[in-house]
Amino acid sequence: MHRFSSRRSIIRIRITAVLISLKWFCTTAAIICMVWGLIADDNPTVLAGLALLLTAMVLVIAQWWYAAGTRCPLCLTPVMASNGCSRNRKARKFLGSYRLQVALAVLFTSRFRCPYCAEPSILLMRNRG
Image (cartoon, rainbow, N blue to C red; front, side):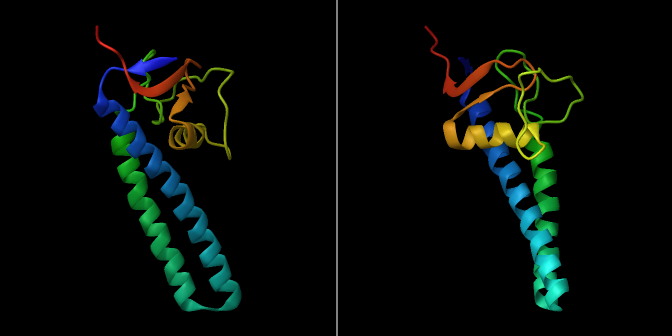
């Protein structure tokens, strides 16, 4: 299990995990609100869906900014950023997304498996000694 060299990188990974999870939640809630509002002919519900969609877009921008610094401690590839590298065959998807899989693993277990090198990492600092 690999560990991180700085507390800053651990905090950045946790913030990115929260942003990715909120983005998925807001997008799903926005679609449900807009469809429900259109079916029920309820304008405030449609407007709430549009507000959630706008919130999701802001979260996407914040996620892109934070995700650039989320590096695997072994291969140094940005774990939660889309960089076009090929992923390991052991990498798993959740709802069609590698990033969501890593984000949920970070939030619920404080560890993750890098989708690029497939090595497990834990969100703890290395002992310097």
